[in-house]
Amino acid sequence: MRKLLYFLSAAIVFASCGNSNSISGVITGAEGKTIYLESLSDTKVLPIDSTVVGSDGSFSLKSHNNLPLDFYRIYFKEGNFLQLITDSSEHVEIKGEFANLDNAIVEGSPQTVEYMDLVKKWEPMMEKLAEAQAQIDRPSTDPSLDSTQWIAKWEVQFASTQKEANAFIKGWLEKHSASLLAISIVQNLDPRFDFIWYQRVLTDTKPTCGKLPAYKTLEKLVGQIKNGSSSSSASNSNIAVGKMAPEITLPTLTGETKALSSLRGKVVLLDFWASWCGPCRRENPNVVAIYKKYSSKGFDVFSVSLDENKSAWEAAIKKDGLVWSNHVSDLGGWKSAVVPIYEIESIPFPVLIDKEGKIVAMGESLRGEGLESELKKLGL
Image (cartoon, helix red, strand yellow):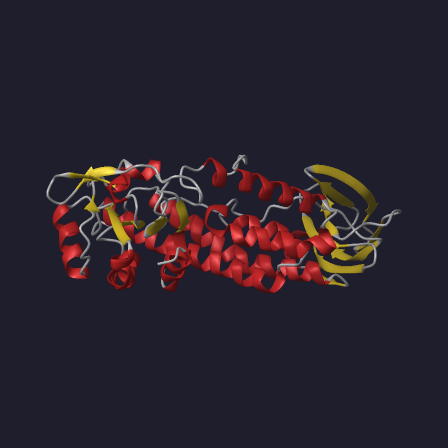
């Protein structure tokens, strides 16, 4: 159940652009307008060629130099443009309408076609995320729902779409991790949870893209994340993998306080959840099963609820059979003191902590069979 929009952008952002030896075609509605061929290299716009579109909509653009496989675009001053992924070995043919270049027909550039197809599938998910976020941020317009219920309703929508989007990206990367486009696509995943995909793309694209600016940018980012010196959320986060888990000391159901550090020496699942969170409740049976199987081997669960109602919190613990004793909450909901400390943007949000108190994994990778897999890696 997502609290804030977490994607790096609402659209795909590219690290570089450029064009091939021959790009021609017909763009109706652009007669008499100047069309430009441009390359972007690390945010620098580099002009390659330009021409005036003929009275029949035809145009032809060329480069006098050999261009490597990279990102390019054709562009009009009115703002209309078409992204391309090509090189000097390709002859690209474009047929389209000036007012709707996104739906142009492109031949001779397989990676451009691949990119256009990806964007068409990607944009509806981004629109759904934006709509859910807008609803979360505004007062309830449903008289039957109070503010908490309204937020919970739209957070379910956000979480569902976020999961769909992440699964889509990973599914696409599974098939295309060696393509130039993968360098940009992977950066829409949160490196805190999916750093393994950054590493895979860096490895798989090196043979064909290793000398390109886009590759160098990703290589630098991956190195910074590994060294903890990046300005990205992964390195600046209090909860990055490899860092010590921040302390939590909150009231229990009986009013006493309990600290996360009191479980030091055990492998701990720090589980942020709430009674009103459907996905949390559906995941609880798996956590219970894992607890019963591994608690005798040094595994424990520290559950932090984002509930506001103590009775609902207590009832959910009993109904779901959450038999461990470590249940805490300040009953602050999304205003709980732990939210900014752990940068919680959605629940369920599981964080796995080793015996020394360091974070070893977190997020969706710990749901379902993933939790047991991680415990086995830790020798339990």
